Length: 92
Image 1 (cartoon, rainbow, N blue to C red):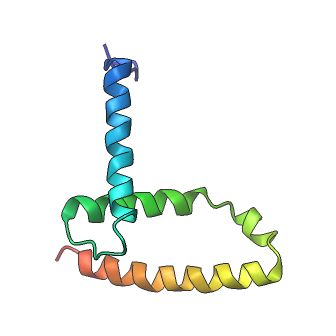
Image 2 (image 1 turned 45 degrees about the vertical axis):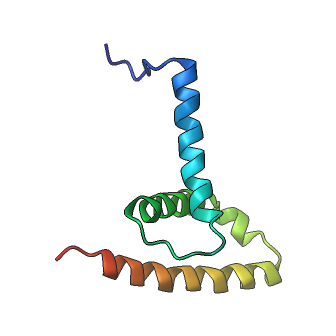
């Protein structure tokens, strides 16, 4: 029966959530070490995309000018690095 409900028990779901949180923390709590493993690169990429998706554009527009300038500069840096990662990941 597939109604979109999970068959796992609350304990299993809790363990799955703890595992996901552990993966995220290991990626971002590594003291700035380079990410080289497939699992950590994929986990970091998913987390970054999810965080960026949560930023509301109308909230960015409403920021004070100095904050918008900082966000703009950071977004450009993210864009540049993201394009380099996408090019490196392209399957030919």
